[in-house]
Image 1 (cartoon, one colour):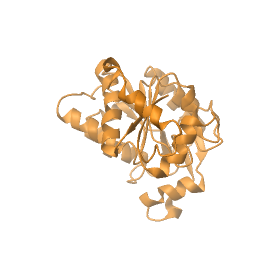
Image 2 (tube, one colour):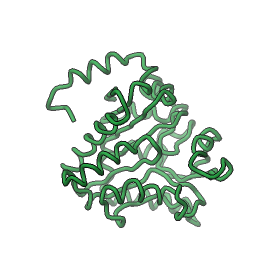
Image 3 (cartoon, one colour):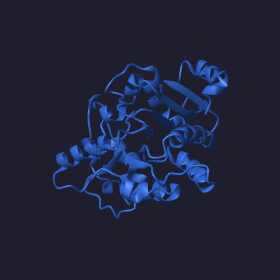
Image 4 (cartoon, helix red, strand yellow):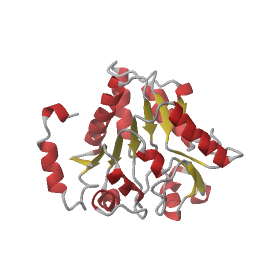
Length: 260
């Protein structure tokens, strides 16, 4: 993996957005994998700024969200249908008809999951997948012990994840217990992965994902198996990395033709 350590959240968003912008510029009718949560917001803000300035055109890009709560009405402001529309589709000027979110209200959940996988395949696969990381190492809603080869499916959220997400709801009890999420195997099929994290609360998870063994105990460690994964983090999230000085040195000495 390429590890990029930057001074603050704004710079994390700028550099990660530059990686994605390169893909959009080369393939304006490609497919973006879209993450929710607080970590990617700086990316979307920067991409929206570039789109408003006429530097990027997202109107033909497809979008595939990582996950959705099961049983939460799509009109709820914290459904990922609503969040993606509010933070990504509208600000970037994407066509809503080209943006897909897993079906958390399906009567036949396995069939809906299979259909989501088929839709990604029909789009030619995901060109660049944006990822955040949970404090327990989850990506998407692939909680610890998720199969490293898993596909889109229903998952039970851990009490820790529900507690972390309770700030978005009226009460902890209002957080759904289940979700539909792209699997780790699905994520690995994307041509490019960009994971962002900010703050010391993510430091342990980042260290396990980047420098620990590849293990279902830390789902994000599966990124070590991908041929083109970039991890963009601030100093807080980097605070437990043993090789942080080497990562800084590598970034400082990156050839100009490789820079974002």
